Length: 209
Image (cartoon, rainbow, N blue to C red; front, side, top):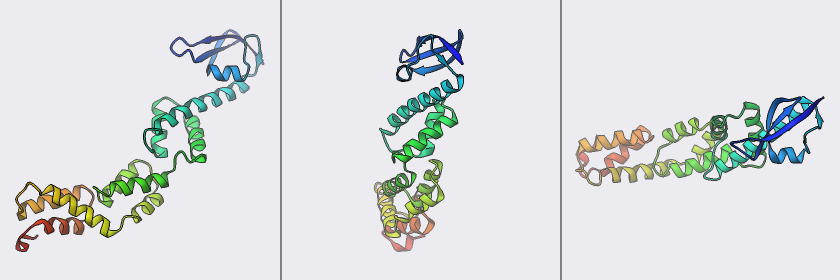
């Protein structure tokens, strides 16, 4: 056992305290945690118990930051993990936070993928949506399920609207149709869908490519 010889509020963050054991700095804790565990100068505590208290404190602090992060918009587990990592939290703390958030369904990659795909399908093709979901850490299984909700008709309609907007102020020539076709490919539409959408805009079918 060791003795708590001092508890000092941190200069830059008065809601946190520095804990000293046997006159040496040991760790930082939230003031609320110090009070809840009734830690005070002169009390005896084992380093192991203090480590557990600190882990709990860090997890709650990280959880609070994570909840604030997702309050602006829905996020994937990977996005939350990267955010907390950027804040300097250790992997063990991040895992504990994600476990809590998953248990309460604050993060759900499957639902995120479905919502994202449904919204993005208005101006992007499946190929681009799948790449974006992959970058966000969505599993292949969840991604496949989300993309399965986008039928061929929905994708064709989206491509047609984008093609019409792209060529609205341009001359309806074969050259511009090819440019539109390439633009649709860059938006993630497959070759046939892009080609059909671009050709529909051309008035003279002989100019189709």
